[in-house]
Structures are given as structure tokens and as C-alpha cells.
Length: 277
Image (cartoon, rainbow, N blue to C red; front, side):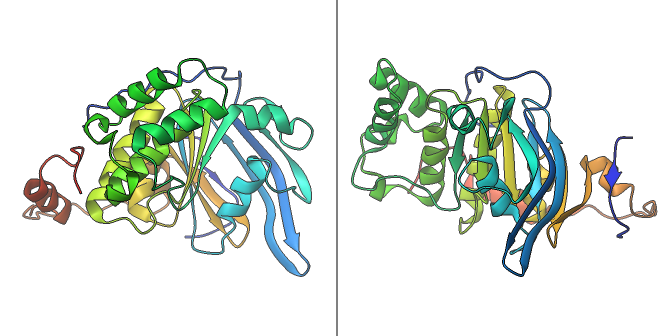
């Protein structure tokens, strides 16, 4: 077991192309990361590694420091101490190389509602100076089950469709590392499931995903590995199975299995991957 505990304490039709340019070793390496704002110590020595092509969930309550970690790793903020490497590049001394290796999706969909879904994707491809932006946009619309809605203005999209488009925009140029900062905040249950399906497909295509979330079920559903960030420190880091071993063994009892709310929801609404309003 590779569990690390630092202080005592208690599917869809989408198909994502392989990410390009991944470095050997950990896709993300963080050691001793610290950040303070005057007397407020946000990060107090954060350490973790993320394996290439995996989904790593940084789990914590509001104010735990999750977004601060992402901002440092994406070169938007400088750490006070410690080191961090993304795709083999140092975030402090090789910021341009880090930015060329990543994509960042924040808590709210960064899409232009005046443009159509296809136009949003074409715009990003042009900004990245890629060849044949139209073909790139059409491919991503198909992969994220948005082809039928591609010509529609984004203002007419549902929350789940906007989030899928936002994640698709993050894939333009096939960055090897993607940061998703609380990507399902404010989404309804069906939209959350759609976003989860999109995230799973990213990792299946070889993309490394660092996901921050405050939702326990989200980390449980998606992550290959989970780190719990509390008061600026990683207090436990491991797979879901390893984390469960921190608790006493479960008692074996006869329980009549009833359908979960998720089972009922999916049965009623049908395929959550379908386009809708």
C-alpha cells in the first residue's frame, strides 16, 4: 500500500484524442509549497505527485487552499517557498513552457454566449495558431456530443452543455495537463454527470487531470488518487481503497439493496450524454 498520511486524523459517445508531449516521471510534482498573505497562511508546505494520464482530486472545503495550488501550478501566482514542476517544467523558472503544456478550466464556464459552440472552438484554435481551426472544432464537437448544437448560440445551451463545451475548449491543441478548478460548481445533477463523463474521457485519452473539488462524491466517482487538503496542508493522500483502510473494517450485515437516487435519476432522464436544453 502506498498511502501517505502526514498527520493523524481520523457512457457517452465521446472519445478524446491522446494528449501530446507528456514528460517522463510525474506529470505534476509539488514539494514544500507555501503561500501566505500577510498573517494568513494559505499553504503550509504542500507535497504531492500526479502520475501521467491519471485523475488526481484535490479535495477540501472552501478556503482550504485548493485554488491557490492551481493558480501556482498554472503560473498565475508565485509561491513563497517550495518547488513545483508541470510536464517536467519548473513553474517559477520555465513559466512559458508550463503555460504551453496546460489548460485551465475555472469554476464557471468561460464561453462566449454570443458566439455559437463551433465559433468558440474555432476562436480558441486560431488564438493557438493551429492549422485548420474548423476541422479541430468539428472534431471536438463530435467527441463531446455537441455536433447538433454546434451552430447554435451558446446562450441557448444548458449548463451541462456549456461545461462540456468549456472542457472541449480546454482540449484545443491537445495539452498534456488540464486543471479543472471545481468544474461542477452550480450545476444541476444531470449536468454534473455529463461533466463527469467528459473528465473520465480526458484521462482515457492520456490527458493528466488535476481536479479540485469540495464534493466527496465527485472525488469518489472520478479520481485515481485523492489528496485531502486541510488548513493549507495535505493530511492524507492515496487511492480510494487506501483511504478506506483508515477506518475500521466494515461490518457484514444483510441489507436489502434499494435503488440509489442516482439510479432513479438516470432511469427517469435517460442518457445524460444526450444534448438538451
